[in-house]
Image 1 (cartoon, rainbow, N blue to C red):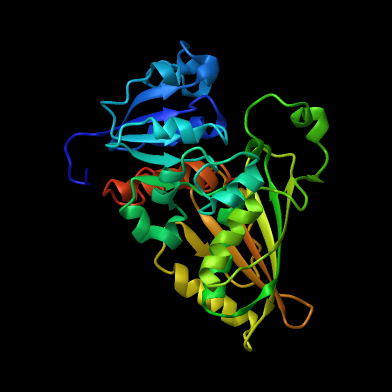
Image 2 (cartoon, helix red, strand yellow):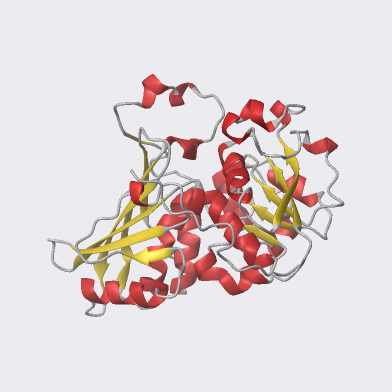
Length: 351
């Protein structure tokens, strides 16, 4: 598979009836090299897509079906948008010729003991875990290009690692004093009906959740530790906002080795100067989630704190696009030899 092929890449989406599945369909419908050949959604099996997502009813795509009834032999690529803990056994059964992008957390953690600790059960496909590549595209591009199985990063870890990894590699921040305060839209909690997700439970308010125990903490620490060459532990607290999409991560750091806020900005600008989707905003500008809504873009702001020796990093993304389905397509493009930006040219929807 490559960018010059005349035949389209045949794709399947497992879990197409969820939010990330719907976002994959929306984005892939504009992708010039993709043909969606298979959509699964066990609870909606037998239904046309339009009955689940009326905004996608006009698309000529297959009827939703159960995974157990799916024929994968004619596919080239599979996107797995299934709940955590269910993907490992499904992927283990897929034909080896398939390239796979997994949007769940099932293959993100390299340490199987850490996975068992944070997800409450032993990993069910340890041999596949050894093969999986962590797909934070701008950081792991070379590995993604040669991968068969890519573990798409979590939404919070994407917004935390993109600003922090270049600064850690440049030795400009204190590795033992990193605080990540993140706020996400409701779609990050998935589409399943939950009492705590009712409108009256979440509107007109904000609340922290997973305090000191959110499963994205070890994923963030894994990436930062790899960049540092030694273990890093961070303070990470996520909050739920009464909005549909978006993540804002406010990250508090202490300077190291005589660095300044200007040095941090310069490092990030150099790192992302040639990137299509990650941009450092001008000095004094505070990026907002509405600046990236519906797009695959990430905006990073750098501010000198009023407290001497410290800086504040702001990072925004759309949790369903760069935080999930958009980054999955970005990775798929790399895996199949297509230009990385193919199908991802959407600008943000503003206001």
